[in-house]
Image 1 (cartoon, rainbow, N blue to C red):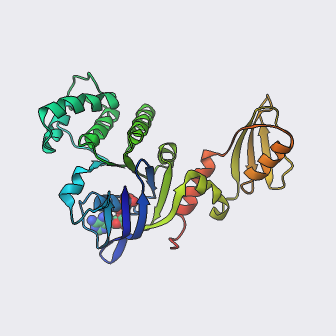
Image 2 (tube, protein in one colour):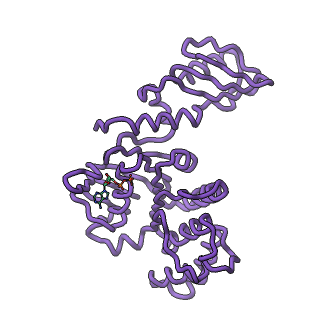
Image 3 (cartoon, rainbow, N blue to C red):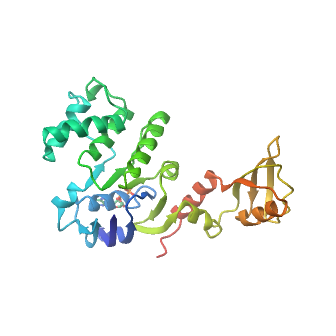
Length: 307
Ligand code: ADP
């Protein structure tokens, strides 16, 4: 579990992180979103014990980071944007080097390292890291972050510079990690990266948390984001009837009549489901389109931090 309590970091009189309070439970994949300069990296550096807060505290599984840096570092796996590896060593040799820093004995290393290489899809790769693609390096970075079997895994801008295959591999690995009850914190300014893997999100703006909640809650607050139009995807078990709802401004129906892309002035999902129920049409999917969620997040980026 990760807890931030009234966490503040001030540089030259300016709060890079401003009174941040937030709890992230075990097994959660939490996305910390925000534009460049919002304070994400500063927050993570304090969480890892790499810089000291000006005031407030960070706790990992109940232990305060700044007072117990050595103990806390054993429970954290941190992957910075650019992970450093020995170029002339293989993945296995690099991981072995880091494992020794954690005092892992040979027996434990011989068990753990092949498991991690398999998790990140680098088992059997003989070449040295100098010959790796960016995606391979990033995957090895995840393995390195997991070497000490941490309860909390922190990934800073994990898919920066990855190609689509690399991004897809990364998502699969993150889901596997959270299945093992670890708490995962992903920091990113790329919305789609966070929305595809994270259960909950926090949006930072000018050092403050301006939104925290699930993607469902974010879509529930679309109307207060001031969006002019919302796109809703609908799929039904049978043909979709006419949706006479005043806020709907456009409907595109598929050839078989069972799928529709609806544009509306507000979140009219409840009204849509009522019409379908009345017509005995079963709903397969009724959700806010990804582009609308992204617009909602961007509208938070543009908000002045209000709390
Ligand atoms: P993000 O990771 O969201 O892009 P950062 O945490 O890097 O944001 O930065 C937050 C703010 O703090 C920015 O305005 C940045 O210029 C400032 N900042 C970060 N580190 C330092 C530092 N070492 N000295 C002075 N200002 C800093």
